[in-house]
Length: 191
Image (cartoon, rainbow, N blue to C red; front, side, top):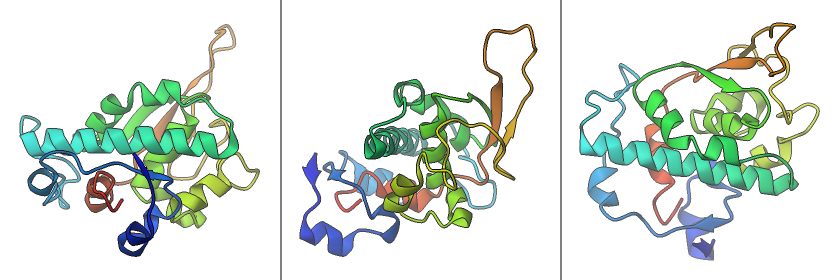
């Protein structure tokens, strides 16, 4: 990974503002990421066995993992491991078109916010760049540290049985299909 250079700053999409390190493009990027695997009409990949769909699912998982780590690092707070270790599973569900995904309310919060950033759901809160997301993470009127409460249209906390020692899961809604251009851009040298 490399720190961002002046040239990268000039050609990087606006939403990438704040990314601290860029990797080299993955082998096969030009061919495998030339067109979105997610159909705009269906919000899902057409064929799970398609190598392009698999490649772009891995790009999304890598983007989720990197963003989760960076947002936690921005406040030196949070638990990236739980979500980061399941990034491929989450990316696969979203790429297959699933929109209601159950998650854990505490340690998965940074990953949940990263996923909602990638699908542009946080734009309604004024979070349009990675810098915006880092600034609003773990802030009272931003992205709380735990998924407590509700984010209208995105997060619906479920009640926990009073006899259960475990926190209740939350059902999150991936509000739309992943932004194919945003997901593919994460692996390029420019973003």
